[in-house]
Image 1 (cartoon, rainbow, N blue to C red):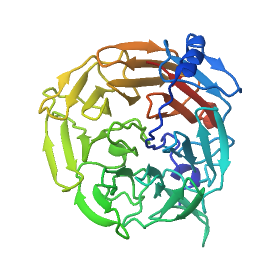
Image 2: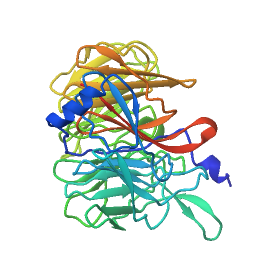
Image 3: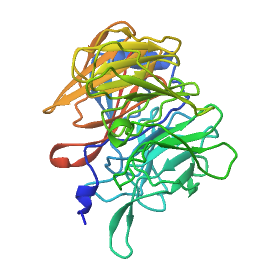
Length: 402
């Protein structure tokens, strides 16, 4: 049996979802403009804005408990929920915290019934959060990590967890989506058994008691999909850098990474569950990641060569776009045609922002191995990281920019 530290993969990063609160107002603009040209580290409550004249990282007090491999979920009121993960012990943790971007402070919430890491989370149409699968620690007969089929439902108003419907297959790092009808779609990830069943789609139809089997989305396993939640202009970060999914209204888009052929784009209709494949990029390009620029457009970028493409929902071919000034490890959409790119190599950071036509440099965050979440107003949140010598910490910062 493998040791616990070998089972939990520290290189992965968390999943997230969307929120709907937009911070605006004259006072916010004045506060941001006064600080726009400096990286500020302050424990005082500050009201940031997404419309800073120049890109600005503002640092806040860290999480109460450092963590990685956790989920980050933006709630309907604009606060962010950090669930579970792992700490320096590499054991799954049960702690839950909520971050308020207005005050810049974390508050502790009641924990989950059990520790959970490498799980996925999605905000449902009614405001609750569904926590899906992941690794849990089983003590009987001997302590071991188990890939879970269980789910939890978190009620933000009552701050309580209740059991949700069980998955048909245990998964960690799964894709989880909630469509406009309120249905939950789960697929991909890792079963822990290393068998080819990660492409099996599971659906929890709104108003029904549990998950049922759907079609097989072939070609997508743990490394291809990671875990992210992207729908109707929302953005999120996957468990690994190879995020190759996005969502338009009721359509899920994924890239099958080719070895010697042109990239194959797959579309899953989230209502009819029909799948079709096409090749919108003429060149042979490997190692592509993508992010939604808005409800109808995707930015597709190579992580190895200076190539980028833009694909609109009504187009059959992707058109060339300006590539980032460096091969990114992270690509996040910021809405309104904007994107964020990040690379960290040997302790050095590169950050760039896309305005729909061109890229401009942004200052580094100063946080080693950060975990990102793109907020619904276009700001970029760092919440948790793994620093030197695999030390887990809870650094928190927000990038504001036009």
